[in-house]
Length: 415
Figure 1 (cartoon, rainbow, N blue to C red):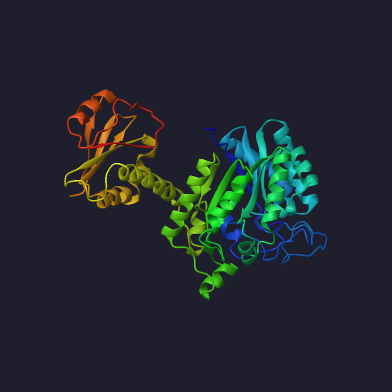
Figure 2 (cartoon, one colour):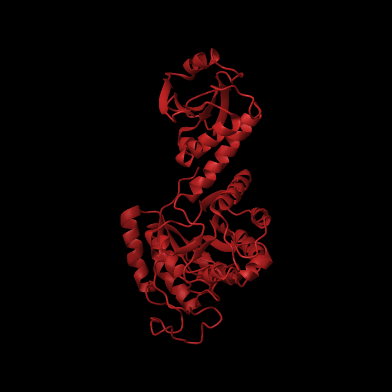
């Protein structure tokens, strides 16, 4: 796995956005104060003032947004914390839809740090309908290497009800052009938008996968205060997904993208103290991504058990033994032992023991009393096999366990 590069973020909320999506309030998400009206590609030459806070006439910078002259100090501060080679990222607006002179000013301010090797590259986020050959040539010249497109959905009805202002065809056109020009492509999708049907998320996922992105971000919809979606929710026009519904859907999506070899860079909004107080309804949890991954591990464990035993066929006192890679142990156990408890209840088990392949030890979880403790520790996997061989009820895999194995979950037997 390629190590993740450090990010130096620059937040430009709503800058360049030609419309306000029903779910969006970037001021809350980025904690940057913005005026209500952002100058867009549609009125970039109008010279409109934004509540008197416009610092560059007619091009949309508002209070709290960095001036191009401030980019150098932001980069230098980021380098002091992250070291050389970090990536500068423009987040929160539609970078390629802002006034051309402002876009060029931002890029020119950053370019010396790219050409000098102090930062590795530049990343920008933008809209699918704000991409063309001329823009991409300019981005490439100034050291932009990664482009994140807010696809959000590949269902035109959902896009229209969400007031995205673009179509699925726009996303397909832009993504193909970005790939053709040699950029790294990241696609963002949302789950639980207005007008979404049960099949919409997976249909979107399939169409996104067909575009061969280098990575995806999956965001379950949160109802943020001050958005049109909040009014829709209050009026009963919109009903957000329940937490469990969102976990099930997003777990499906994570599993699907993984099967396609597409990295899932994030599941759920990036947590912050400021944002947590701005959520009126919908899905927001700082550990949402872990819930989804844990659900996938539970499904894997359940499938392994189902392939060997039937519900209710295990006598009281039976303990199922699983081999789990150390970094996935907490996902296997689940939040508040949720996975352990569900598996024991469904299959009538007295307990579940988890074999840590790296520590060569077993942790035991029991139904009665809920006790947890280390019950075995071995110098090698062969010692573990000797213990298991005399107690198993169902044949276990023999001599296949090695410390550091990459297998996520492996059923070893019941004793």
